[in-house]
Length: 122
Image 1 (cartoon, one colour):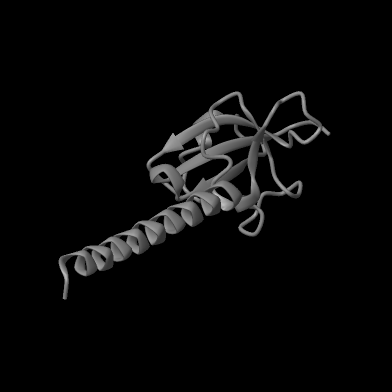
Image 2 (image 1 turned 120 degrees about the horizontal axis):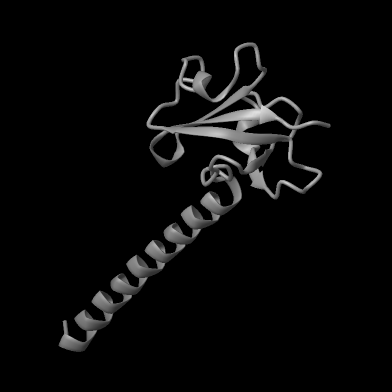
């Protein structure tokens, strides 16, 4: 085999590998953009929209931060607890008065966190 032939095969293999990596990275980026945790950046004082008035296991993945003056602002973030996903635990209790109704949004994104949500007036 000639030296030029070996070089062209190595070049083609390298191009295919780089193309496959670029496609893989693009797919992962698109997946994160389309289906990623849109409430991951929420902080106390932010507002959150869920696809229904109740954020449940089925709708939680579709919760997202929205402007508080938006008609879509269903909940206000009273507090955020990082490092846990235990929505049934007492982590959010300190952000609310006794007997006050609230919802806990749990996510495994960003190392796991809870959003302690106060329903906004309709």
